[in-house]
Image (tube, rainbow, N blue to C red; front, top):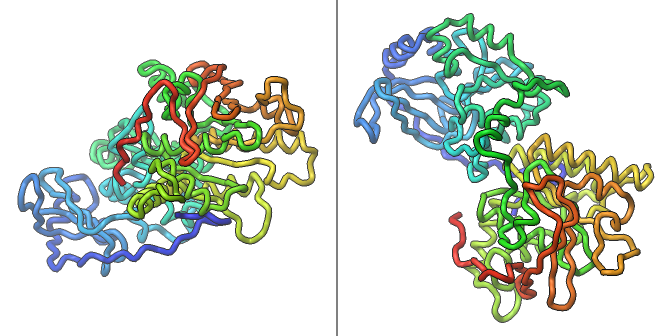
Length: 505
């Protein structure tokens, strides 16, 4: 299980380099570049090779190879046929193309979609890199499908470069996947330093061919912040408005519990405040919802759980994945345990501070930003809030500021955050504490997008939704759920549990 500490760290994976090509036919490279309007001298600036390659669609064909990493021991070579647009790849490209050609100390990082765009921009004197796997194939409502989140690890590989530059400038393709790529990269990098250009044609190479190098230079000079800091034109929301017109309002992700969904769904950019008496099952409900969304949608989650050691929390999550206890006579098998751990390793990270220093909301935000960049995390759990260090301010002011910081962070990185908060000693007559009963501040009610209470009376477990900011995301009301004590699983009372199929790893 991955743990993100004060900084995310992991041992670099050992990558076996691919063999460089034994034959290089320079004319294949130069002729192809000229046919695409690119200065042939560019071939001397970048690690490009020409050779005859076999492609599944067309057989053997002249091809240009784009070398990733060290040219003498490349991590990958992506081959493109010069006649038809066919591709094949040796190795696995996991970094930007063009990194080694960037000038030292550059203040702007220009990112485009394909290798040919990098070469086109180089013809205009613009240093750029391209993403190793192009724009996302799966796009929904202008966003990257969460199941594609693992394909953006190249950002983590270049995090020091990204942190060092003043601006990240996107030269995107003018289509839906290209725009979705910009949105996802900006979500992970942080929109504050992201800029975008508008091209007269589909991409940089086509713009070069039809309008020359000056058009690319002018596009760079006209780059705009993404979005303007605090000032917005209607055109800044064009993608969202078109999506709203075509698709209607964006609804939250299903909790995986049919009877709960009419009251409560999970929308990125929102904050859920969850409360309840000790032992009511509020943390278990959040875990259940996260497991369901991970299985159904492929989301990934960062967990700051102060009352559960990570290994014990992981065991609880494994029970929900498999549907069997981790301990006892009827426990899960070792194969089932291994499956659960593999699944959890793909979808959960734990925010731990091992240096003995208390966690603050800012330290959690900082660590979660790293998890967003590295893994594409879409959910954050803070359980419970009272373990956070908020010294130096009145409790009311500290809680209000903490919630404001989390809400702004969720919106800027399109996360859904769950805050678990214990109620004050004064409990209402019905025994169901709500937002106004949470210890410390009325801000719990005011700043929550969704407010949830879990209550348990003997074998009866109820979920009460006491706030829903938007009616298309949820509604006020309550629903009774089944709770299985041995596995910690929640299920609908009116529907048979659907746990027969596990997702492929």
